[in-house]
Image 1: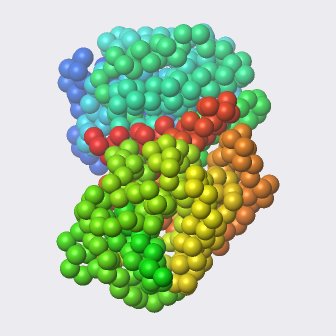
Image 2: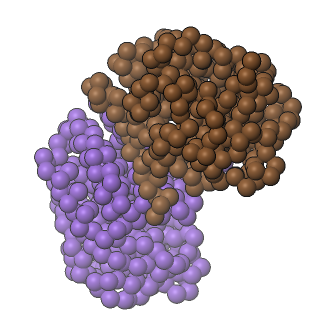
Image 3: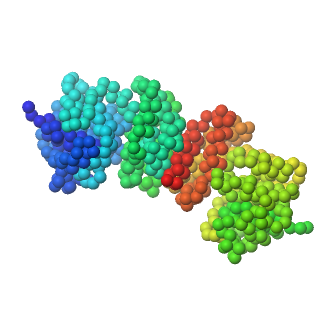
Amino acid sequence: MQATKILIVGTGAIGGFYGALLAKSGAEVSVVCRSDFNHVKQQGYLIQSNTLGDWSFMPSQILQNANEYQGQADYVILCTKIIPDINRVQLIKAAVSEKTCIVFIQNGVEVEQEIIDAFPDNEVISGLAFICSSKIKPGIIQHQAYGKLTLGSIHNPGNKADSAQHLSHLINQAGIKSNTSGSIFKMRWLKCLWNAAFNPLSVLSDGLSTQDILCTQEQLVRTIMQEVCTIAAACGYPLANDSIDINIKNTQAMPPYKTSMLLDFENHRDMEIEAILGNTVRAAQREKTACPTLDTLYALMKLKELSLST
Amino acid sequence: MQATKILIVGTGAIGGFYGALLAKSGAEVSVVCRSDFNHVKQQGYLIQSNTLGDWSFMPSQILQNANEYQGQADYVILCTKIIPDINRVQLIKAAVSEKTCIVFIQNGVEVEQEIIDAFPDNEVISGLAFICSSKIKPGIIQHQAYGKLTLGSIHNPGNKADSAQHLSHLINQAGIKSNTSGSIFKMRWLKCLWNAAFNPLSVLSDGLSTQDILCTQEQLVRTIMQEVCTIAAACGYPLANDSIDINIKNTQAMPPYKTSMLLDFENHRDMEIEAILGNTVRAAQREKTACPTLDTLYALMKLKELSLST
């Protein structure tokens, strides 16, 4: 049986980690990487995992652009941030063939239609990573904790039965939990519950940890989460009644944590404001649901973004 | 006729400026100043005014504490910020005699009861300064623009007829507009309309000017102002229908402006979060009026304050 051919587009803390896992399980993993290209070409990746130990990963093809990809990819896995400056479709288009299954492991809600519209004849899988990891240097990815990858097939014109399961299996084989889900849209809203609260609050508070925020403004966190629940329900994805309590409890149990948006802000990188907050408030508008707290956070984050550029 | 005896407590950009004006009009003006005491003792104040030119002001008595005041003050004028660390009553108590009229020129809403309760037998005047001024060095106060002082007698057990008018007259005589008002509570809410919007937004956006905020997030500004209008009305002080439009238009006409809260934040000084936002949301709670945007801003400013201390 031939090795599964996988192209990872965007090899930061997420793409680099899952790419390395897939390679560990025998897949033929290539990468499109831009900022780290020279380093990776020479030395590949080093993964430093708190749970799996250290290992290195030399991709099969190391590319600067998807149009350089040789062969037909079984999976193209998009792992960039979702920000206005990145055209997700253009980034992967040249490497998508008839048989390619497109996977995106990205944050945010209502981020799937653009991909389905651009590739109506390909299977599309929506992925969510529950992980603490960061790229600490070019080519060096630190995996601190967690890592579960949930995959859900959301568009399957050829009725392929096992694309998500096969990918999930490869991840599991490498020692990290992965499952497939029939309710990936709902899970995306559930993840957004956390992201829409702690990401902006950590940035707007100038870097307070999740612990400091929860200790002093738990009510604000709950109000934000409640608004997300209401919007999710209006969109047809009612979340479980105890979602908020569980999220709060889990966050209290986590070590003080710097959110991804805070890390981006501190490093003057683009933040995923639109994918996490913008899409949420636009969904609320469309569903005629009030979300005054999220509206305020969204506007404030746009001001914060503006202040970075002035 | 004897000169009016005035004690100014808190001689920053507000107290120093109005004290100097009152001295200019012949009042016997003394000051309680703490951080600048040594400098002022030697050199007094220098006022650099864009409209009135430069002049110096040597107070009659220069004190570190109100209990050192010699004589009986006709007016004690409180010009500190309103922050939890400052006990307004204790600060002036020792200099208040039976005949003293107490004036406070301070920001915020619902800040009067504490003073009335502590001095039930004295006349109390609530003052609002519409001014751009700043203390640029110890003893040096720069007056950039505006300056109008509105005074309203809010507690007058002795039925004195002209305390506010007399003070107003002295300010006018020195070349700066001042008037008395029978609706000072409503004016306080009107000033809060501006303060509750631009002060927190300037801090939460990391220092954007009023212009940048208005150009990109006018709707957020209007939402905040509308919530303040609703609370003011619930408290019995309905503001004019065009208050928001006028405030927006006036701000657009102002040069880009750094708010006082932003200056405090940038200089790691206490901000007037409670007087401006805290009292507003507490009034809303009491009146059972929803103000989700102000609730969010208040919580975020408390987080911002916490981040300064961690």
